Image (cartoon, rainbow, N blue to C red):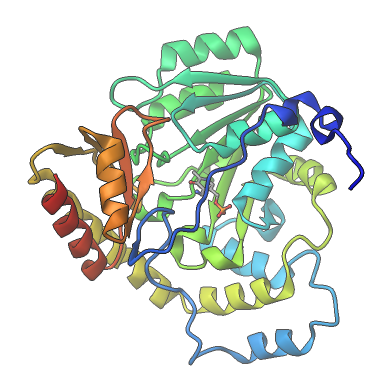
Length: 350
Ligand code: PMP
């Protein structure tokens, strides 16, 4: 084979980049990726629209995802023109950074894709550590905004991997103080009793909200939404690939969103399971769970590597967070049965 030095060809910012770590590990109980344990789509109830989409696979999908955006707009109580669809919200994060560029500011620890995509697009990253309560360190953040003048600020609230919502007044201070775009990533908002920031779009032109269907039972579809004012939407739409959301994803999501009752009851089940899981974890010696507004719980334990490996050996797959938060692992809320298996296994090995 002809020898070519690929590493030499690659741009330096990509050469030093580490790809997103998401392993597929054979396991009995999969609680690593903040997915819903319940699908929001019923194959038996599957509507005519999905069958029609299957028959029309020779055609490109609706590039504007008109029906889907209309349904989502109704759900979020905004106008359809304020919504942009993405192949997962990951793609919309990519589009935002491609559109506005850096510096890109975000608190840490947080969702790793803000940093990975910034580096992939060769944009400067400004990372501000959260305070001891996992809340935004407002003095440091405001000082960094003044110093670096970020074009984009990402705030995941509820935050992944810590699980908490940031204080609304601190988020508000940032939106008011920043000259750049402030993205409130509400991937886990459906599991929180704190209000969404969408109504504030009326007041702030620099506010962007991100939502996803991935955490509420449709991760396999890859569907995310960006909600913002028309000027922002128009600019981001220029970098969007024309057929970024395929026709099957559109049809299935439309069907699932029409059956909101099922979706809502799944979310309610996750919330009540989270409460049960949290109080059981509080009673296990040696582990300290952190309160969560999301569909996962971060917890502290001694010998994290060992605990993680021993759980995996017994078929329970969770996420090792030690690289981001010292001595911490993250478990997704599963079904009652899955949570029981996790609790029994961690008790046995602790
Ligand atoms: N934002 C946050 C905070 C996340 O945790 C995730 C998924 N882990 C995403 C966005 C991306 O979600 P998706 O691309 O599946 O919509």
